[in-house]
Image (cartoon, rainbow, N blue to C red; front, side, top):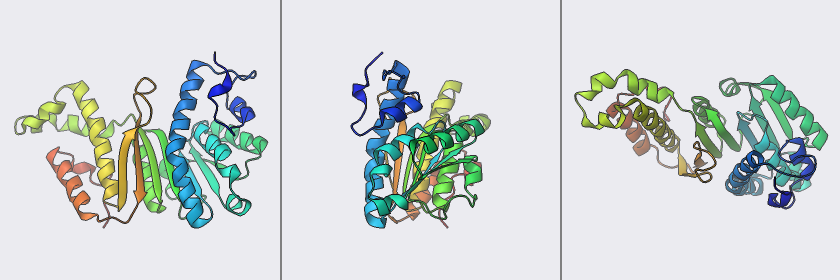
Length: 280
């Protein structure tokens, strides 16, 4: 066990206890330390984006997809949102999107107990949220931390539909592209030596995961975003820790759209065109 010295200044100890990151006597086990380290590391990337939006607009809205127990949302609110000037704070909001009703209910109860009025939790899938009237027509920041498989792509679709200024993704368990690669493997093997990259099943899975994120980055660039890709934390903490950050800059779209189409065609993934759609 460890003392709470790793907790950031200004962080509510009572909130961390309520989230079961700290025990009642303020201690932290190995698993909790890992979770907190991940969320704090992510906070370092997100906080400047929130600050930029709050300064430019006077308020900030954030939608967290696949929120789970909403560690990220609560810690963001505690470390940033609750300290905004009154007018900015009154108009700022975090929305947590989660399919498990019991987690939505417990998060709603914790937000009420903590006195965090600018937090809402919706029992929706990421796909359902795209058209849900319960969310604002435009949002500033969209996050999706370990949203599995196509839920990350749904989060991107949501962000594009709601004209998000910033998108922060940590993709997870992407299997869809690998399944399409597998389906067409026999047909492609004879004609293209590059198919050796995904001939073996393990390589198909790993290569499919890599290609999925490459396609996501190209898709975001094809919608005018500037994209950066980095590591969330050291590999010892999580194998699913590729961090994709996209900021809307209204950049030229054609080259990225053409490249995306070329990758789909080269790898026999044309049927994925609808998922990785580009701007008209």
